Amino acid sequence: MDIRYRHEWKHEIRYADLLAIRQRLRAVAIPDPHTQDGKYLIRSLYFDNLNDKAFREKVDGVNMREKFRIRYYNGDPSVIHLEKKSKVSGLGTKYSAPLTAEEAQAIVDGNLEWMMNSGRGLIQELYCKMRYQGMRPKTIVDYTREPFIYGPGNVRVTFDYNIRTGLNCIDFLNPDCITIPAPDAGIILEVKWDDFLPSIIRDAVQTPGRRVTAFSKYAQCRMYD
Image: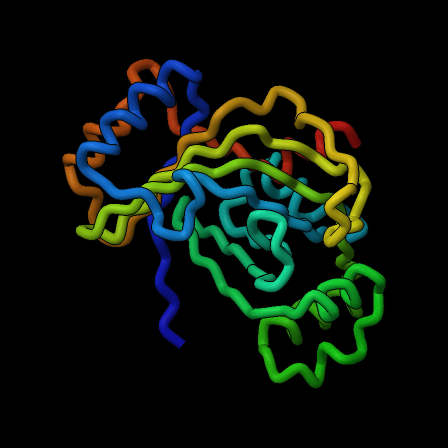
């Protein structure tokens, strides 16, 4: 299988930065066509093991790490995906497999035996890690995303904000599950690209005085633990 890693930048920015960068991007890039009024809502359920391996590795800056999550958009559980994100030396890749709402709920409920016969490798991998490594759903992460795309370099620029945590709630498909603002979570600018980042995008996302950061929405949403 051909594994393609992408470059990733993350910056924590101010609201004034968002307004300026958004205006520049609108002149050179296009909004993701899957948005509603230029944005969409994301709900993710993140997994970790009994030792909080994914959380600790992120906080400690481990060079090679991975995390599993289930995700759907705009409160619509008709399209749900299991995803695994892997990072190596600042490069990232993502694997994905579809789930039905019933399958997602079964995972949340701990009904796992069907996973090995699912015919989907990523679901089978999650089963093995839940069965033998104690991996379990940990917390819900909600946020709003504004995405832009630019063809050359396969560039994707996103603004993420209104980041909220479900604390220890894992009732992933319940729209009434209570979430609260994540501590110290501002606006995250993320830039992803393949082999090269075009200068027109590099210039558009410039934020003077801002440094690349390793911000993690999952880690931030675990800070109340």
